[in-house]
Image 1 (cartoon, helix red, strand yellow):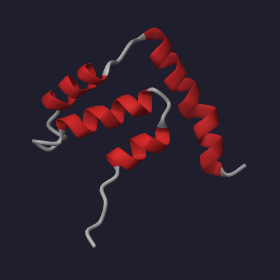
Image 2: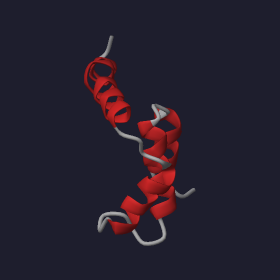
Image 3: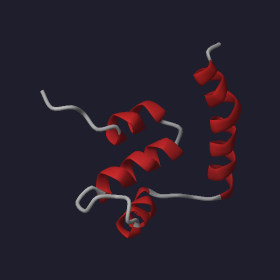
Image 4: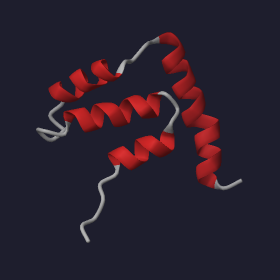
Length: 73
């Protein structure tokens, strides 16, 4: 097991499970947080909200594909 895999299974997933068990974060709520965040660029709030909601739902692959910028060809 690699370091990243161990970190994900040992720290990130348990924390995510506690967070989502104790609280409910809808896509709309995550988008509203992004609207208020000075670190989210204007016009990207929907994209960030969707990516963060996917991450909190445990769908890390889809979250990464939404949140990580792609280079231009």
